[in-house]
Image 1 (cartoon, rainbow, N blue to C red):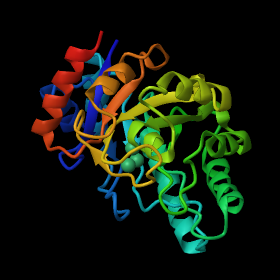
Image 2 (image 1 turned 90 degrees about the vertical axis):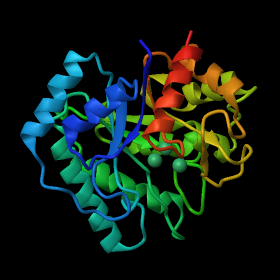
Image 3 (image 1 turned 45 degrees about the vertical axis):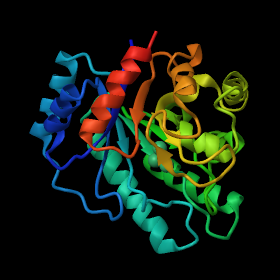
Image 4 (image 1 turned 60 degrees about the vertical axis):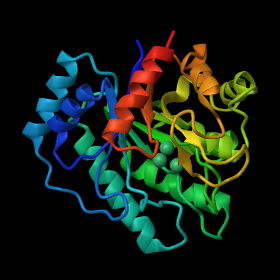
Length: 276
Ligand code: FE
Ligand code: FE
Ligand code: ZN
């Protein structure tokens, strides 16, 4: 099954996102759990959420991805920033228990000066405090572009987080094609080798979702500027190879390209045509 979707606005509520996804030709989607640049969240509506869950079941949706706000930085040197990250993480995890099989993706964080090891320790403090044995959600570390002091731009840094997590059976990775390209991994002619390296260092069994984005910049640029599918450095020929790669079958592919919904619908249509 090819699960393809895109990032959607959550302003109309949960069920509305499911319906919008269908209109755009999608069978999965991603959304921000709250204001991406702040932290505020609308009051949780369990009925609306339950309506989405049945809608998804009726319409054969794949797993959906809830994305934590960008302001969540558990690796920060600032205690207040870490406290905020911990409270958002705990609240989001609790809400997502209402969506069976939900994937909760977050940017591992930026250590802003005190170094990767200390930052990684803070990330683990958060995971080990708020994850649990019996949780239903799978938490995903997003592969990062390596902008500034971001942690998670190498597979080894992600591995170190997984190794320190007490609940690693609920921890996985979301692979962002723009980010790993920007981080220095070849996703074009070296795609096979890159995925082999992912398997060796992290394990493909930890890979739960793909952020499918083209990049405005060449391999290793560390910029994190997404581009529309086929219009960037990666290019359509290689995007086609990515969606058809045997190691990535069955995963939800979420577009985070600079598009409105109409643009997303066009990309979804194109990708379905390219899917073998
Ligand atoms: Fe992200
Ligand atoms: Fe992403
Ligand atoms: Zn990005």
